Length: 222
Image 1 (spheres, rainbow, N blue to C red):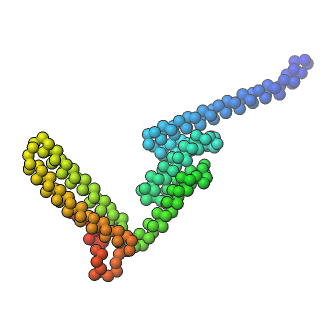
Image 2 (image 1 turned 180 degrees about the horizontal axis):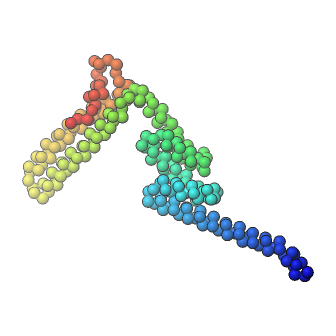
């Protein structure tokens, strides 16, 4: 009888202790998971892997939505992702990336500024497309042509370098010829760039006798 009385009397205390121990263990495990995910996110950021960093921070926040490190890390990485996809003209993806950040940092100045920039770019893009539907192809051709100038500039520099150890003035003569061609190419590309801006701003002219060249004239030079 005495033993049964003692067991009944102390049973609630034993149960409470067991629950406390279990709760403490679960809390420790949750804290460990959050720290581990945050560490994974930090490492991914150092390696320049924004996608993996975002996943790691989001996993940490699933366990503890209030964790300051994960919230700060996720907001920062989502803004970075948004900037990257915005620069690739993927406006919808940029807005989605900002929406994830906005859940953890509403009214954040970085988010609001980038969102406003994207909205303005969308408006300007619609105007450009309306004025000059083939702007993208022409712009790509101009970029390729200007990129080729690097090769020409490198050839001029190489001729000058050869003169440094051959002392052959023919190398200088070659550099001069290449420089004239380089200058001529720059002038032609500048003219085409000016025409490109006119088409983007004003649209493709309706009359064929206009002073602005047609889009066909803006194709890359051979």
